[in-house]
Amino acid sequence: MTRSCCSCCGCLSLRAMGMFVAFIAVFVTVINPALNYLSDQLDDSKPMVEEQQKPFDPSVTDVLGYKRMNFAERTEENPDLYLGITFLMVQSFPRWMTKLANWYDPTKVGDKVVDEKDYENSKHEPKEVDILDARKNAGTFAERGFTLIDMEGSPSIRGVENWRSPLDVKAFQDELEPRLFELYPNASRIEYTYSVVRGGSTFGDQPAAIDGPHLDYSQNDTAREEFHEIYPATPIMKEANALLGNLAGPKEEMKVLLGIWKPIMMETPVCDNPLAVMDARTFKEDQESPQFLHINFFGFQFHNLNGVIHYHEDQEWYYYPFQNESEVLVFTQYSKGKHFANPHGSFENPNCPDDSDKRVSLEMRAAVFFPK
Image (cartoon, rainbow, N blue to C red; front, side):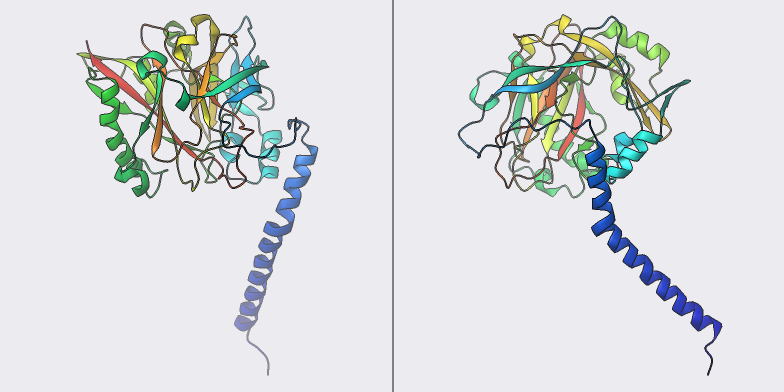
């Protein structure tokens, strides 16, 4: 008795499906880890481990003599930073695939093609800094530009189902807004910009900015206007439009841009890779230079005028040890008409318990408007 062609095709389809499933299983368990390992071995850009991890000491919360904060060298030209598709791949794609894309795919900005492995004029110098426990050091938001808001008991802290959904995040924003008005009682309006997840494993999540002190937006208004004459601010670039005055009403003006940073989707408080901020009182105008940032988001070109930070021994750095999901770090990204802001950046905390979760954070900005 012969089998029909359909039954043979069905057997072949089942066999092919079985072989495909088997291949995926082998790829996930054997090939992908092996390729990741090989790519890591061939990667000569990884930093060397400086010292063996010491046992965790819960009484030590000041990070003294941190040696890997990479400050910008002073150059005659503004440094350019180009980021391409690997910027969005690094958190969710296998490491070998990200390295392959970084090697193969150049980033194109306008008519200029640049290799993402080479950041033009982007020279840095590591400096040793002390990063002190902000919980133990007195200072007000008005004095130093940053503070920690405890939202314990707020429904949105544990109630948000999807921190990557703008609609879900809005519940958190609505509950945070009255607390921001307490910091600025004379403000007329607060408008949030887009939120970003850092440290997650979903496509679109961004990596943590470790050991790179910076400002997301330069304090130099003249340089920003000149920059956006070359690279116009599209409607989707809300922060740039707010800074250029395009979002203000006829009887108001945007004077402050805040940074908002909180842990999300973590069972333990943040220990490694917390956010460090510089006390605004110790940040001087000549310690920042504008940086041209260009990111290729799969066809959409994002252009922004960042600020790179130059080192000075009088600068003071702080962080909040073991920040939990109910605690919201608010800091100053920009102040109109005065040089008052908090350069910031994440760092590798050498004193963490073994059971600490990997840091995952939500970040956004809030433009604060005032009556004219």
